[in-house]
Length: 223
Image (cartoon, rainbow, N blue to C red; front, side, top):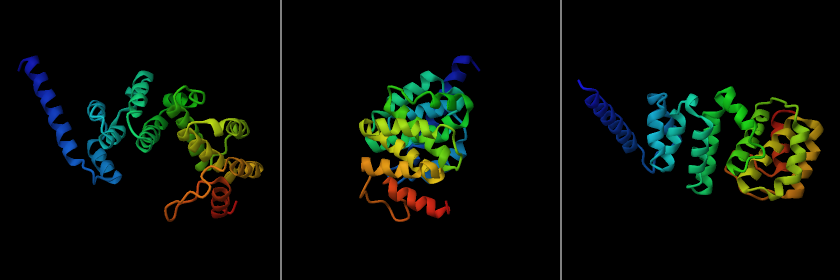
């Protein structure tokens, strides 16, 4: 078989695979469904990029599950982050959070990238930095830089982009839960900013308003 014909067959197989997967995704597809599809595919970076190129939200979420983190260079990540701005507020936040949780936190090199994004020009990268800091603490891992981070949050949270505000608030919340010496400081921060005060949450979810969040989550843990 000629190299040309082999390449043609390979491209046709890839096209068929992409189309068959897209046909499985509808408006009724849930996140659990995407995870099942991803489990069947495992890693396939080329397929992931084809799904990403559709510019559709759910295929892009699936793409983030099957990407190979070894191929996530600075340039590739910058392209993904730039593309996310094509989506509405809720979708772009979900996409950047999935990129972080499913890919960037799985490798020391990409974790180092996250840790360099505190002052990034990209609001989505800054969100990732703060969300990562919050997730570390959410898992009960006390970090040595809580005082420093709270100082930054206190100075900048009011003027930050909404997507970054949320992640900063999330980090302050978990600092307040697990580190008693900063608890009153975090509660006062919430009272001053008033962020998420009175915001309705789904049943079983904790309010994001810091005084309420810290009171509920610390009580759950007897802290």
